[in-house]
Image (cartoon, rainbow, N blue to C red; front, side, top):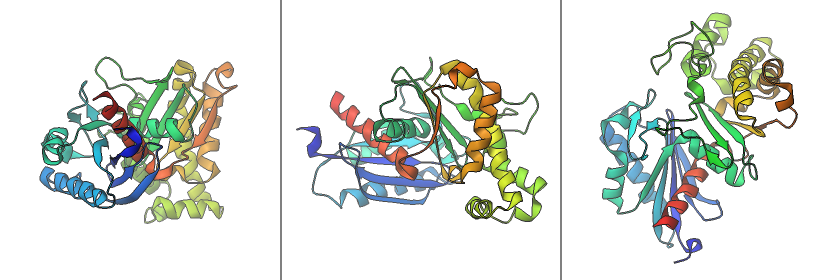
Length: 310
């Protein structure tokens, strides 16, 4: 059966939200939705939520469902069948998600790190379309990252390459959820960022990032400082990656990224100061073109590729 005659389900499950849609071969989405994820509770509750999402989407179309693509916030084993670490999503570690989904649905499941799926989506029809050398960053509960070099995801020997959020940017720094100190995520992940806001701008601690983004656009100096802080920390981490991988594009996604120019300006300032000038000539910093559904598109794309191999 030609690939255009069936759908797949794309799922993106992070520390806060579960996002899902039916994905067509060209990357278009049907029935896409987002809801609070059950990743901090019991495994069976999370499995039930995912199965309900798949059933809900399948009911929207008479076209056969042939595969499931799944992006998760965690480290995977080399075969990408099991989640071996997930500081922000403890439910993942309490069961065998791929095996249980395949058993309950009868469909093949392809799973990868959520930042890798974000990169696949943006490279397929998003901000990095046409580029073989780019870096993808997601800013949310944690800091996700993926690196595409020569048209291929950088995975490393154990499959764990691209964990940009856990680059150490300080000899001594805040404790990170991964157990280390001074990781990029420990500064601009949700926990670290809340700590910064509470210390530097305590009256702003009651506001969420969306409210702070609106305040920044109204020239509130406290809010502007928050986003410039995020940009500075991010730029420090990215500068080293620019020197190592010489990317053409850096794509930034996630809720924090929709904050106006302050984050991007500060990140570029740090990259400009710290990275090789010759590698900055063709470098572009871009916002995600697919928004919150980039990981869903990427998961669907990987599901189509998996089905094509079978």
